[in-house]
Length: 510
Image (cartoon, rainbow, N blue to C red; front, side, top):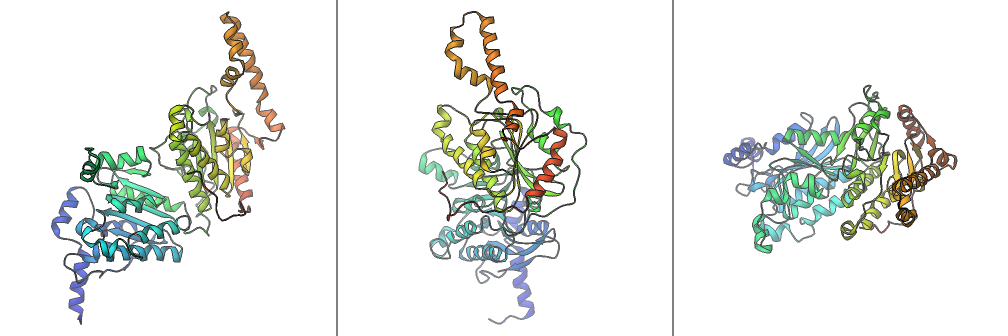
């Protein structure tokens, strides 16, 4: 087939236009942008170079085979991207769709640049399953490539519509997923399929909507009101990370900490009184730099990126505002993944500890709290980036271990004057040791005096000055000194040796 310039231009326009106008109108009615508009909003103007525009050009009604792939720059930095076009058979996958996605991930991995997924897809075209599903270059190769690229290059997903069936694993294999409220969903089986297989009556929103995945399952990381917000979230996420695992995170212009935050005043005297560790982190970091991840899920642990004097750090912090800051199954998983993310991309870790320990009881034991806790402790152990453990208020039991306590080779363990480090809190300890004796004292005043005396004795035993004298902690600093102390210590640790163990990989307690 010979093409003259006019015929080629018609072919090009048809490919760029996407699906029929009625599908564009239907998407617009839902507040959805055209896939090419999303790409234009994400990348630097004039930087996008597209591959595979004419995929399946001989077929009727399949412009670009329903997916846009190519390279561009975002804030001046190179990226690779794919974007499902939901005006073309609901963004479903054909054989050429799959091949285009595979190729662009392979290119991102080979060139060492971030890979961005703009997802809005009904999943595989069942009618084309033999061509796209089982082979060596079938849909499985997408996930294989994502797994290979994981920890080598940043992978971020903005989810604008469905991500159905096997296609749901594209977001799952990404570092983070920004989901648009009301339109985005992830599910392995549709509501109709679920009812057919299990008899359960549900809806896509109730089963796999954005609120479900960002608040309950933890598969989603950001709940966004609009598509523009989701794209901006992806941009901001990438701004804290290097292009690939061999590079250092980008340095920003140093900024001061907020002038209106008194760190000492934020921490109550009573360890029973909750306070918001997110406010503490914001008051410690460069003003406006804290970028929280998974803010709506497992909120007893706060994780996110920030900057100290322009340098990127990853923050893992216990938040007593939620469940007293106790570590549960989900919060252990949340922290584990974030620690691994930071270690993969050379982001130093700052642990802000105020942890009573891991949750106990029949319910959490059945959920596997020991196994999930072991995952978090494994991640802390294996992380070789600079690590600073700051005991803000308390670090009890295995919570000390999970928060990079002294036995886990932090580059420093720093205590504030309010810090307590112990197997358990004084009240629990006194009860554990003297329960029978306490029960045998009939007089209430005598009983209270006995408990108070034993509690004071326990508090003296774990006094922070004693722990400093025994070299359990490396420094005791006032809250107003903490930021400068951390800046200096992270700078000193920057060139540390990163080897952990002589092996291929460990056996994770999954």
